[in-house]
Amino acid sequence: MTTIAWLIIAAVVLPLAYFTWVLVTLDRKGAVAIQTNLAHGFTHGGNNSVQAAPILLGISKRLTPGSYEAKLDRWLALAGRPESMPLEKVIVAKPLLALGGALLGIFLIGASPAPASVGLTIFMTIFLYFIPDLLIYNNGVKRQQAIELELPNTLDQMLISVEAGLGFESAMARSAAYGGGPLAQELVRTLQDIQVGRPRQEAYESLAARSSVQDLRSFVRAVVQADKYGIGIAKVLRAQAKQARVKRRQRAEEKAMKLPVKVLFPLILFIFPVLFIVLLGPAAINIIAAFS
Image (tube, rainbow, N blue to C red; front, top):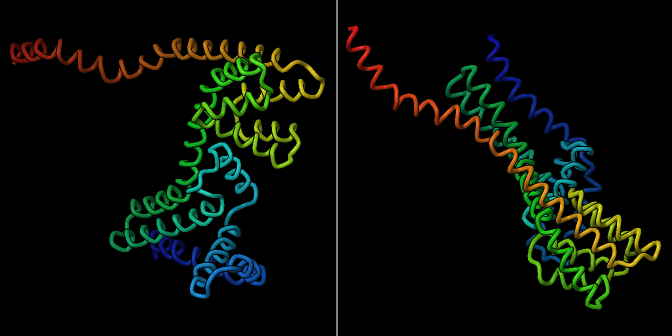
């Protein structure tokens, strides 16, 4: 048998054997207990869908390493934990997407057993498995950039409110009420944590842990230190707002400095060749005609 035939057999047999092993070694008692808790309060007609969810989740958790699951949870936290993509749904969707890509690749290999089809099958399987990661990571990066842009204005609003006589939490609530971006959502969540009885320091530290923006983390550390040692919050806000404005201006200047370098490669690869063709093309045609 050829190498391609062995690859086709392995692509079919190994995933099926692994899924069979996962089904056999699955903790069915735990799945039944989870199903019982989830089905509490539902009608008898909806038990089939409720029963299928814990089984798929258990299989997907077996296929997903613990460290990788923690990384996904961190990315979801940076993305704001969107309601359409909870962690359990992502964990279940990833193996299903990979299995769909593998089955589609097997059909392609059956129609055209060539090395290109095998490579395409492997690529589709890997790409479909990691496409939820790309979406979550992209949303997280955009959200953190929005927080970084909103932070100086939010600090200015909080400083004005504190100097007008409001407390720090009232100023935070006022800034969150007038804002509509992800930073306002994080401030609202922090205030909700405090209202339900969570210590202020833990709520502020959770705010910093849910973000990768260094300016926001620096602000949270300054607020925690001010609350611990009794420093006036207006002084802290004034210093942090000034520092945030300076860093925003520095980031804008840095992007402006990088712009000529970024424009250089498209200029060389796309604009200069067309310009040379337009300018030197007629002369080259005349030279060729003269010598021919």
